[in-house]
Length: 133
Image 1 (tube, rainbow, N blue to C red):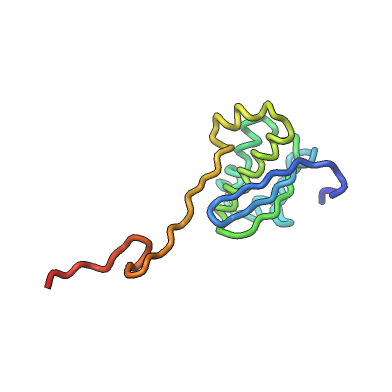
Image 2 (image 1 turned 30 degrees about the vertical axis):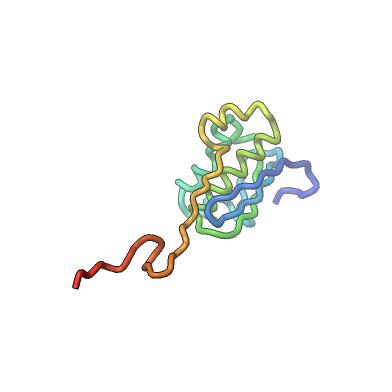
């Protein structure tokens, strides 16, 4: 595990109901999510690829070890939250990363959340079938 006495860069990412607190330590590219390796935690390579996107954008795949505490939401929302957190932490580490991260759309918070259910409807927008008689 990574020593907590080292200096690190911090970034917070959110998506849907998921909140990810990300720390970037100097290292060799390990990603630890809630105490487990990223692939073990997510179980899908596509989600791990989503998490690594900001690192690939600034060519820093093997420069940082990443420790993440994530809670809330599902695994897809958590992966997107971690991606945003990593992008923000990379920005703290070096301001010149802003242009490539912005170009790939990795600094924009995806604000879409589930719409609330309305009274008289079955879901947020689905209404009961209309009957004429």
